[in-house]
Image 1 (cartoon, rainbow, N blue to C red):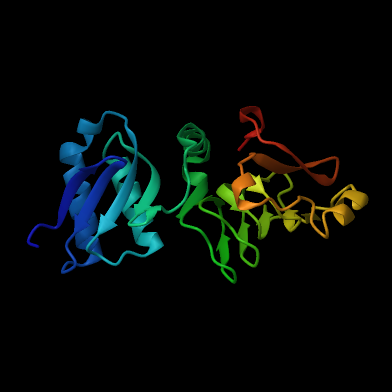
Image 2: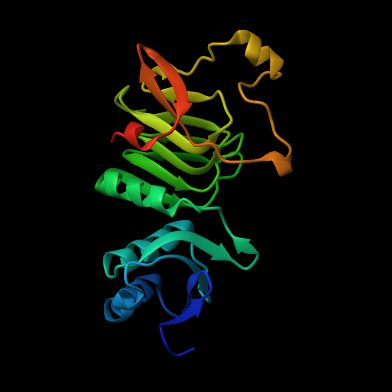
Length: 233
């Protein structure tokens, strides 16, 4: 392959074929130049993206996506892989709202965490993926998860910011902390009924997203349905 990058059209959006013989900084520069030339063709499209040829880390994928969005009108809403969508990201409008709100106050992490992973950010954090049981995330600001939150999440972690919040497409954990305040389930009987968890586990064919948000109210962390009006950053 002689070109630095080739753009192929796919049903879900675009597929980038990257030259494996180049350094990543050179690839990043080439992708930036490519989308400065052709990015307007997509006209504010919200699309998926996939990569081929270069062994990218999650951070490098983010850098490429950030460069594409900064030099075109495209908005990337998911990353595709050979076996399908890496993570469900059908709420493109919600992601657009989050991007508009957080601007430079959050870091985007693309991809699900694995049990044992421990992420830490000085700013807020937006995870496009799942946080499974056994994984941990801490952020200086808000935590937004475009997936299922089943691990430990601590928002407002470094300055005891009780105004921070934790939002996810589905929250299935009691391991939440905002500032110095731990989430404590209010209904002990409900906790016993659910065998140690606040929420009943569902069978795979019963799974559905129900966006929720955890925030501090009257000195306690409460959980409630996530609405646009509650997304205060």
